[in-house]
Image 1: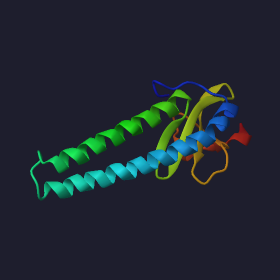
Image 2 (image 1 turned 60 degrees about the horizontal axis):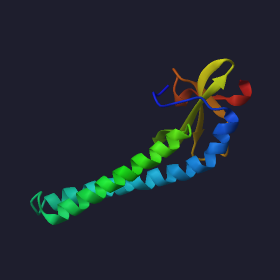
Image 3 (image 1 turned 180 degrees about the vertical axis):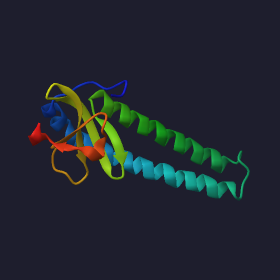
Image 4 (image 1 turned 120 degrees about the vertical axis):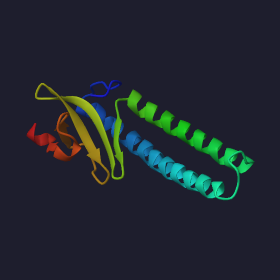
Length: 132
């Protein structure tokens, strides 16, 4: 379990899902923005020196975007939600099933949190919660 993680019930995880989906969409957009900004800096560096004001402007925007990213992740983690991946979008929460600490998992396209996996096994080895 990550250092900043804590246990939530499946009911709490399900309650957190909608806002977490919104946060995930924001993170995906910010990720795309940072990649575009990095490409812009690379393109600018082909024609101007690193100290050029245009480079500083794009670098400052990149830094603000990364700070926004960190704020969104912190907000999610403070409620118990953890981002597993952006593409595909995957989220998880830590909880207890059959007296074992597990991770409840959700992936884009799924309507609800209906899967879990052993922490040692990873997201790709999820099992249905109905078996628990």
